[in-house]
Amino acid sequence: MSAPQTAAKAPAKTIISFENITKRYGKVVAVDNVSLTIEEGEFFSLLGPSGCGKTTLLRMLAGFETPTEGRILIDGQDVSEIPPNKRPVNMVFQSYAVFPHMTVAQNVAYGLKVDGIGAKECAERVEEALALVKLEGYGPRKPDQLSGGQRQRVALARALVKRPRVLLLDEPLSALDAKLREQMRSELTQLQDKVGITFIMVTHDQDEALAMACRCAVMNRGLLQQVATPSDLYEFPNSRFVADFIGQVNLFEGQLVVDEPDHAVIDSAEVGVPIYLDHGVTGATGSTVWAAIRPEKIEIYKRIDGAEMIKMEDAPQGHNVVAGTITHLAYLGSETVFDVTLMTGHSVKVVRSNLTRWDQEDFSWDEPVWLSWHACSPAMLTA
Image (cartoon, rainbow, N blue to C red; front, side):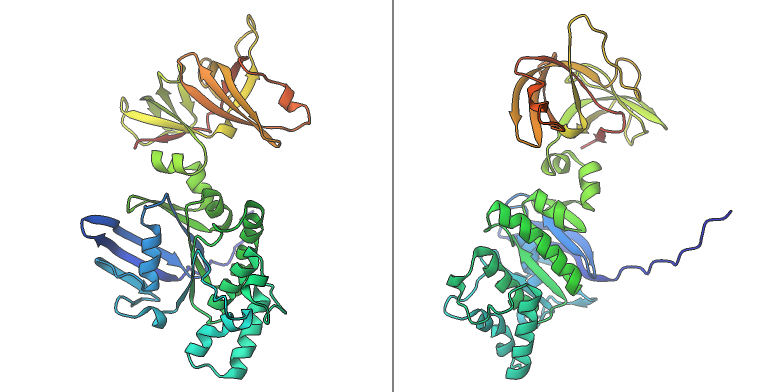
């Protein structure tokens, strides 16, 4: 029986295009030949360490900085010569920039009044914006009567009230405490889904980007490293930098000694046993490569002297199983983090979920253990 026919999905519309954008400050290259497209309705994140160029790229989109080279298009229109207040974007700053002498309603209405919007329409749109960010009834209050999370909502309402095509968020949660940050992550994603506006967020927080964005662009030293969904960035990084920046990772250097269509083998002196992958890879046999294995994908077992070595079912004997000794462990409630030193002297990080209340008692410092991982776990990197 043939598979049921499904309607073809309409292609996504590109709303933002960065075309070969470079920004120099004297001899310093802040953004280096970046080309990138963002689709309408996306929650997109620019992610990277401090000084990588992500905020500069956002400020060029907002119109606060001018590219040294290249073009920025919004809805196909080159906005290079258009001033910030004429672009269909609005920005929420890291500091919120809420006016302390104005009420909440006056803060939200400020941009509308500058644009000459009438009092009746202004009041209606302010009420609508406050409802969107769950601040109904807060209009008469002053900012010093609000919590940090509420002040952030005021800044969001002030940006949304102008109904921009694109909302720019510069480290929007960095001033909040950890618990409130987690709450606001959920609220921001729900808000973006409700209003349907394209959100572009700058952050150095990997968890924030992975939890909120549809796609992320990872930057380093002004260069675009990888653009992908959060899951692809984590599971299929394209470089050691991305693998190391996104979450925790164990990187093992070695040589690619076997490369067949259905499997590959890396010989790593750091691990001491061959690393077996259940798929072919892109690389020249004999070249230097790195196997990236996430700590939670490594299993840990007690090692009893004289007992037979364990074997991974999806790898040949002698592959993907290595002996070591626990040199440090940290109980974190839901999980325990282990530092294990292999016979080669190389240190490996392992994260083990605590599935019962007694799991933390299973292992101790200086205990000999086996580590193992499935053949599908490592990602092979060539750079």
